[in-house]
Image (cartoon, rainbow, N blue to C red):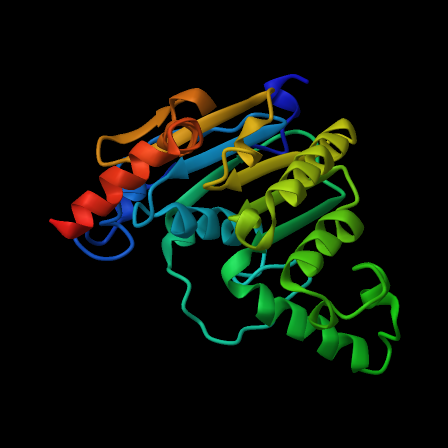
Length: 253
């Protein structure tokens, strides 16, 4: 797939319009370092430690595209609390020539609110059970957290779509994360594009992808094997006793 086939080809930020680089969210490292990000037509990862601004950046991309800040499709308009930043007003998108037929903004931290809104819409006249059917036919609140996450990935994501996922691994076991990776592959085969912020080395493993890492040094491209997520996990699994000894010694000190 050619880069020109991407639904979302790149983003940039209009720095001349930024009111102040000293206030949130413009003081976050992800935003301070943001120039132009080119997106892979299949999968793009945004990784890094907490506090760097990954979720804020993902939210801004999603809202600039037209998604609800708390998640869902472009048709969702609910708001439990307006806490999203105004960063999206300063983000400009470069769209591809193809238009997606589907799309979804998935963010783990507000998934409960999304599930509640789906239940509410399902009870309203005119909706019937159709909206629940598109999520597997069962209320997302009547499943475990992990099951409801995966039900959305399997049932609601239909292909030929732009899917923006913020920490989708939050309620998924390692086995489910591998199943999610297989699901991503299926949807990529159906001409879908993913932008994923994650801490999971398993979900980072899609081979045909671009990976950006946000750190105190800025934003740069990296590979799975170069990330701290991979290196620390590998070290722990290969030498658990030594790492535990180091951790506990540090605590004792």
